[in-house]
Image (cartoon, rainbow, N blue to C red):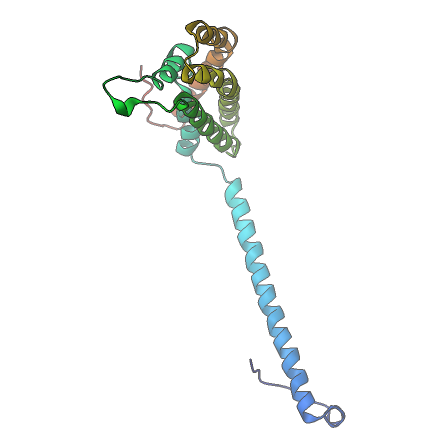
Length: 216
């Protein structure tokens, strides 16, 4: 790449170094000077982009987006209760003699729980990443996080164990014992947090004039 050489050059330097060397010297200086300018421009661009992404991440979500993630996403675990979710997992293993397509591989219930776990983990991560400053939004966010953090270990442990029993044609007594354990040990606190999310969510929706059908 060629650059125009500007300015007066000392004659003695030219005589000592030779015309060809002098031309090469200025070519190198101009080349690396140009490369340095390009590097600085790219660095400034990268810094600018990084700052833009940082400020975008720090922006508070709209009330609609926030409500969708912290309240509406609780529908993902609306079937958590043992009498409902236990029945769903049981149905994953049902086969019909006159329907060859209903033949099971033997891990259907476990796969169903695995998918549920992934969905809950994603929802929880999305909620934690929300940036809010209002006191009411913070309280709602905290309760929504608490809800997902309470149900997640039950899916990973008790419901996964229940799914294995369903796939393995375990006894009704073993399965019932697991469901009763969830009902006794987990449901009271989970129902309480569900109610908190519902109450705080309703107040938040009214404050921000969100059109929500609560099913009442």
